Length: 235
Image 1 (cartoon, helix red, strand yellow):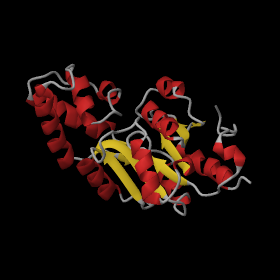
Image 2 (cartoon, helix red, strand yellow):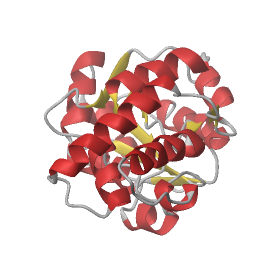
Image 3 (cartoon, one colour):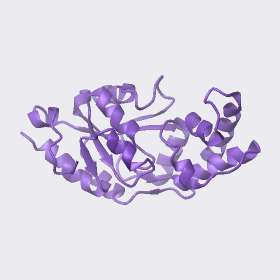
Image 4 (cartoon, rainbow, N blue to C red):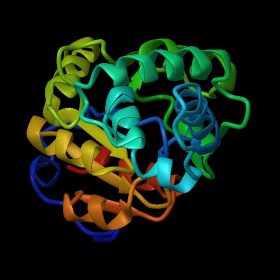
């Protein structure tokens, strides 16, 4: 799908011009590959395991820290060894949240241009690390709601995080736009009844994200304000 394509659904009806924009974090707003890889490899090495390449680790990101470490160690998520790996990973990552992390191209401009709308963040990254990243990066827009991994009983792709954000913003879920680079983001939006925008170039595999069928697919976040403006101005 292209940005110019009408995604249909509630947007086509022109019932509401209120929109809340919900962003994923890793791979969507920030390039955090190196810092995540360093934290994962620190934890693996501390347990005597073999380290992995950043590109391999990036493929394991998206479903929360526990599943990330389980995948990296080739263990079942419920394995007690994952407890020690997770503890080591979180301690290192909280101490080094943004050594190499930067905003992705187009993120600064998109956030600045959309700052007049209710903005929110929905990530499966653990809360403590999320807070550290947000504090260090000095983003150009303030999020009115932030839901991080572990804040709720279920993470993306379950619809609960978006449902909770809708309540926090005093909006209907159908008035939210979920913007992300992964299938988890798109599936979460679909399950909740929200619009979805997939962005290329993130940490997630493009094919997997496209298989989830986002309403709109963009090559860069720089194109997002134009899409949102079109939805807001529909009548």
